[in-house]
Structure formats: C-alpha cells, structure tokens
Amino acid sequence: MGVKLAGKPVVEYLREDIKSRVAILGEKNSHPTLLLIRVGEREDDISYERSILKNCELLGIKINVKQLPIDVTMEEVTNVFAEANTDKNVHGIMIFRPLPAQLDVDVICNLIDPAKDIDCMNPINLEKVFEGGSTGFAPCTPKAVIEILKYYEIPLKGANVVVAGRSLVVGKPLAMLLLDENATVSICHSRTKDMPSVTSKADIVVAAIGKAKFMTENYFSQDQIVVDVGINDDGNGKICGDVDYDAVIDKVKAITPALGGVGLITTTILLNHVVQACEKFSGVIE
Ligand code: NAD
Image 1 (cartoon, rainbow, N blue to C red):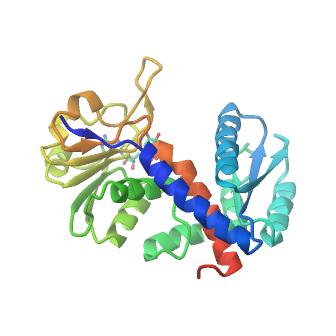
Image 2 (tube, helix red, strand yellow):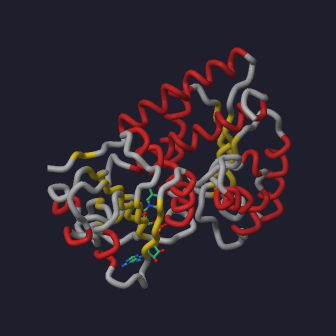
Image 3 (spheres, rainbow, N blue to C red):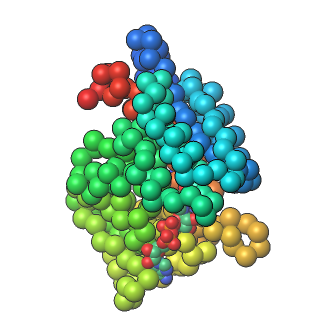
C-alpha cells in the first residue's frame, strides 16, 4: 500500500516558520499587511476570503478587505491599485478572479506593483519564474507542489519528473520551479502520444490536467511519487483528483490526496508571500 502524502503537516511546518518571521518583523515595528480586493459578492470569493481572514489571524498578518460593487469601473479599480501600490503599510495585494466583463483582467494584472504581487498576477513575476531563481513571487499552486515534495524529503536533484498539464497557472511554471531544483523535467499534454508510456517511467508524476480520475493504474509504476493537483467534481457531487486515487494508491510508493493535499497548502503559500514582501520592504531579506 502506498503512503498518503497529506498536506496538513506541511501547512503546520510552514505556519511555524511564518509565525517566527512575523515575530521578528514585529520587533522591528513592521507588520505584514495584505490588501484583499473583492468585486461583487461571489460565493466562491467570500468563502476563500473567510479562509484567508482566518489564516491571517492565526499567523499575525494584518488584512484589509476592499469591497467594490459589481459594476465598478476600470477607472475606480485603477485608482484602488495606484493607492495600494504606494501605501507603505500594504505589503501584498490580491484581487479575486474571475472579474466582471467590464474589467480588463490583462490590464489589471499589469497594474499591480510586482513587489506586492503575492499571487503572481503581473507577467513580470511569471517572467521571473521562467528566468529561474527566486527574486519574484511564483504562482501559489506550483509552489505548493514543491513544498510538499521538500517536506516529505523526496529528492528532486536529477530526478525524472513528468508534469501532466501545460497551463500557465500550474503546469508550465511548475516545470520551471522543478528545473530550479535540478530535476529533469518532461511535460505531457492533451496531444502527447501514449502518455502512460511516458508517465510510468518517471520518478515523480505531477497531475494537473483538470480531468476527473483520468489517470488510472496504467499511467503509473511501483516506487513512484504521485502529486495530484487536480480538483474536479466526480459527477456525484464529490471532489476528486486527476488521478484515480483508490485504484492507484496500491500501485505507487506515495500519493497526495485530492482533498487535504496540494490545495490545502496554497493559502499558506500566499500568506508566506505577504511576509516575504514585508521582509523585503523592511530590509530583513534582499
Ligand atoms: P487547465 O484546464 O488550464 O489546463 C489543463 C492542462 O491539461 C492543459 O495544458 C492540457 O493540455 C492538459 N490536458 C488536458 N487534457 C489532457 C489529457 N487528456 N492528457 C494530458 N494532458 C491533458 O487547468 P489548470 O488550471 O492547469 O488546472 C489543472 C487542475 O488543477 C484542475 O483540476 C484544477 O481544478 C486544479 N487546480 C488545483 C489547484 C489547487 O490549489 N489544488 C489550483 C489550481 C488548479
């Protein structure tokens, strides 16, 4: 039976580190602060906001929520960003997406100061991920994958890693972060020929294709580590991953669950970015 790689201990480990850094900043009278911008009243946004508020309280991170009406104009949003970008008491900025049609998301992504762009919206931060190194803020989900692999001490240097999925949110930036860890990375996608023959030869397989239980036993082999990023509806109202967990866990060495796996870690990564932004602003780190 393969081992279940749960996200909870990873979150606890990261939280302890964040709390101690927040305390160090507090001694210097610096208080990491997040500005959360919400347009309208989408249920998904409100629920995510609740989770961020709870986590901020737990970690000692200050948070301000700017609520904007659903019919807000581009000019008003532009002004909110201009103010937040220059506000010395705001270290991280995030706006919930998707946005209503009158708002141009591409323009908005470019409005945010890259130094405060904790959710990697600005193309400048994505570009930094592709350049390598860690001077910017990488997207939270790929970062969560790296954290989970590191926490469980899964060697990445020289490892053959297959990433299934090539989206700009998960697959492509994750491939770059893995390269930074000196892994040998292959990317599979919807046009890959005979994907099982590629994935089954890897040391580590990361599934990020957005298809419920798509990857079954034949995609995997013994001794493999599987990270399932997928969060899908299984057709019966339950959440499932891209990997058929029940069929695969007996075949591989270890696997992350769809619920309580990678997704559990992303909010902590986001808040870690707020603390990092504050550390850079206060000169604690370069
Ligand atoms: P996406 O739809 O933007 O991209 C899917 C990618 O998978 C594409 O690059 C496509 O080429 C590839 N693909 C599609 N069908 C394929 C197939 N049959 N074989 C091989 N590759 C195939 O999705 P995304 O935004 O990258 O998200 C992927 C999954 O991760 C989704 O289930 C999403 O819900 C989940 N997700 C989870 C988190 C989290 O916090 N855990 C965050 C973001 C996304």
